[in-house]
Length: 286
Image (cartoon, rainbow, N blue to C red; front, side):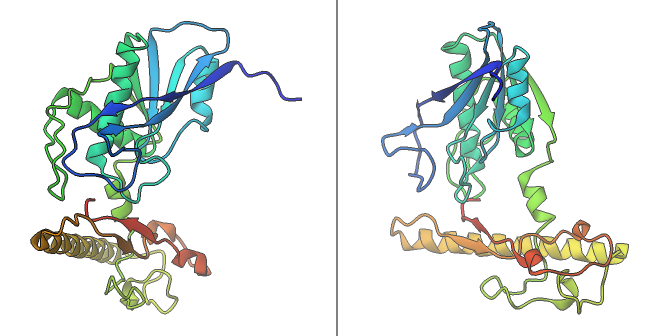
């Protein structure tokens, strides 16, 4: 028999207006200028009040299934697990847009629910989201995305959190992905064309773990070279789309072989086809 829970959960829907310069294809952003993020609020089962709300948020994942938010609610805290407009699908994620979503939750928490204090809790990818949000709420500077699309955080009126906590957080999604991308790919449209000496999964590669420091430096430099080539490919495509003046603003890109960090291999091991997997979607806006 299951034990009674010492917390209760409630579904939360927040709709807020966004005056966007372009219509997003994906995400919980409606065509009438409303963004519709959803969340789960955990409250102590005994109805204990609190002046403080703990806010968990990740750019693309939902965190209500993690044990920590539930344990915090069971101990008497009020906890909100927030989904961004891109929850469960970050194929078209625009991080500058994501920063608007916690702002809506925090404003709702203070102005509607009446919490005196809000604490942002950044777990994993939520860590960089939390500190970036806080920096932009205190001193907003962002006015556009790296692709040049307008997203003006200076006029968004973001409310700063009263505190920020990071749990098992990494430095950033950008750095995490950059350190894992496979630099052996020579042609993005033909990923089977690869540089043998940079392919960690090819047993013919003369460089085997443990890797020499010189090889790791060469590998990291090659990763950045591939990142720059992809960036130039994206920028050139965007420039071409704009020059056509057809109204088409975005294009899908497939980035193959994205799991190849040398730290995966610490000693000689049998390579498997599982290691060759790892395709992800990217869009020209990111």
